[in-house]
Image 1 (cartoon, rainbow, N blue to C red):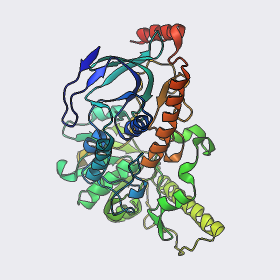
Image 2 (image 1 turned 180 degrees about the vertical axis):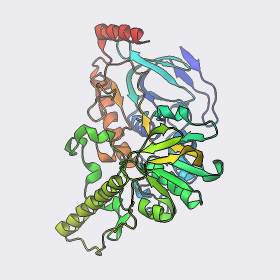
Image 3 (image 1 turned 90 degrees about the vertical axis):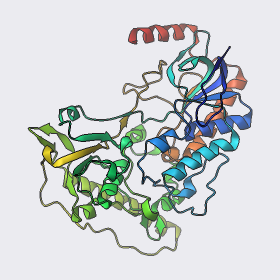
Length: 445
C-alpha cells in the first residue's frame, strides 16, 4: 500500500510506503544529517517534514539574522563549509542555501508537507505514525524535531490594548514592519538581545526587559571565543561532566552576535546610547508594565559569566604556553542609578516577546518522558527499543546544538539503528506494553 503525496515547491511527488524500516521525523539539519548516514549505510528510510527543508531558517528568522557561530563550525556529514570566509558568520539566506544545497547533494528521501500528528507503539512491534498523508508503520523512529516547538507568550498579554502590536521573536522580521513608536522587547537570550540591537541600530526607541541570560565576548586575546572554547575541548564536554548535569539542557544561551563580522552585545552601551533597560517583566497592572528590581543584578551576573569564560582562556594560554596578546578586561560603561519598576503601556506601540519556546511532545504516545515532559535518553537513545531523539540542546555535548555537533550525534544514532536492525531484536514495546500505552493514550485523548 502506498499513499501519493501532493507536490511541494521544492520536492517531487513521492510515494510514501505504508511500512518502512526507519522513519525520521523532521527534515532540518538534524534529520538530514541522519539521513546522510543512513544513505551511506544502505538503510531504507523516509524523512517526514511538516513544512519544507530549511523552513525554520527561512521563515522563522528576522531579516538581519546571522549565525553566532563562525562558518568553520558549519559542518554536516559529507558537507563541510565551502565558502571563502571561515571566520565569518552566515546570514539568513546563506544558512538556508547551505542546508538546502546539502539536501540536494545526496537526494535524501524527504517527504515535504507531511505532518506527523501521532506516534504510538504498534501492537505487533515497532511504531505506528499517524500523518497527514496516512498511517505509516516503522520498525525504528527518530524524532529530529528539536526542542523549541511552541512560542511562549505570558497570559497577561491578553490584557493589553488591541492597538499594541504583539509578536513573538519568531514572527519579528525588521524594524520597518512595526508601527511607529516605542518598542518593548521582553527577554535577553540570543534572539531578544539581537532583536533589541536590530531595532536600536535602526533608530527605534527601545525598552528592554533584561533577564538572567549570560553574555560572552565575541573575541578575546586575538581570537574568537568560539575558537578558544573549541581548542579547550568545551564543545566536546559530555552533559554528564557539566557542573549542572542534565539541568544544563534547560539553560539559556549566551548572547553575542555575528552581525557585521561579529561583535559583543553590550547592553550597558545600548543604555548609554538611549535604550531603556529594566529588570524582568512581571506583569501588567493599572495600565503599567511592572518589572522586578533585578536589572543591576542581571547585568552584573552576565558580566561575571563573561569574565569566567575569559578566566578559562587565560588559564589555557598559561598552561599551554600559547602565544597570545594580553587584553584588558571589560569595564562597565554604564550602571543603573535606580531600578525602574514600571512603564506606562500608553508609551508602547509594539512588543516583541523573546522569552523562548516550550516543548510539545503530546503527540508522542510512548512512555519515554520524565516528570517535566522531557524525553529521557542516553546520547539520543531512549528506553523504548528503536526510538531515538536528535537535535536537542546538550543531547550529548555542548556542541550538540551546533551543526558540527549534530553531525556527530547523527553518526552515533545511525550506528545504533544499524546495529539494532542487524540484530533482529524486536523494537517498540511489545504487545502487552503497547496495549497498555494505547489504552492510556486513548484515555488522554
